Image: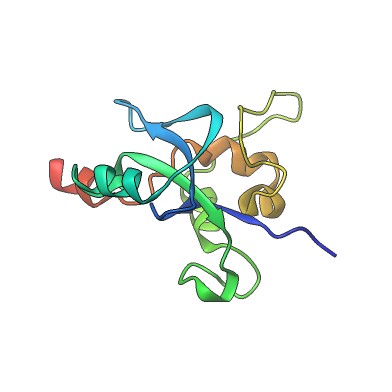
Length: 131
């Protein structure tokens, strides 16, 4: 049986894993240690606006229960790779990742997904409003 996949662009909800923080350059800076968030973290994070605009979270991939599901995979990574094709050379080391072994994007696209992962901000509403 195949291991369940992890969504690397989940919502800030109790039980999710904090993957990283969006830096001043707009790229996600990965954490070195997994941090499962609780209701207290969620409440504090929401007090500063949408947490998904400032942090990236991971949770179980919902497949057909997600609006990004295309029927065969996650549409987010497909769209990002189509619009932001960043080459990943075969010999380049992969960036650190807390979920690579179960990551939905990595299972679909391999190292190519890792090459664009830090460019994905789940909620870009605040970024657009600030421009």
